[in-house]
Length: 248
Ligand code: CA
Image (cartoon, rainbow, N blue to C red; front, top):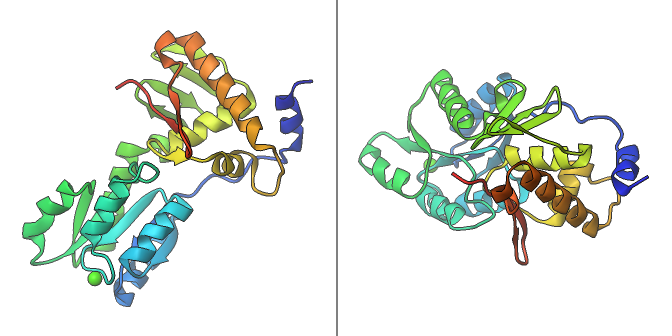
């Protein structure tokens, strides 16, 4: 029995279907309540930060699926938060929608320049905001649309546990499948070994950190067996962890 079988035995059932986690960085309580109420009704999980510095810290700590970022914030402006998120290898892939007040519309280009994916002008209707969130998630993380994940030619049928790249099958063990799914759900993010262990095995299970290296090696091997140039698609980031990079 190899260690992937051992690990498999330790895993107790699948986690429930993942809800998209949205971090709202906003200092006005009325707008926060509006966002929270409407997003929760649409089955999003909502996290809240009330100033720029707190927002930055929470993105790093919680890896949200998308950030709603107010422009005018105490401590650090939305633009500055956006620049810092894009400048950090761990957070540069997180989708960002800027919330801008009327009159700041002239600055929208600055917002998009600083790395935002989209913007919504206040006052906005909840349905408009939700439509924009879904559109950005669909563009960046097709994970939330049905059971098939797709990213740069890599396709994962979650129900059938079947993976292909450019139509050729990739043969993966169950643990490698879970690791790959985690990377595909968060393209561009750098994950430390501890974060990968927590996400793939759950944080109530003790697994040695080097176990993850073994599975990463297997994942690389399976990918390069499918297509040679994919061998390095999970890149080691010295001192930080691993990131997925696929040929464009
Ligand atoms: Ca504000």
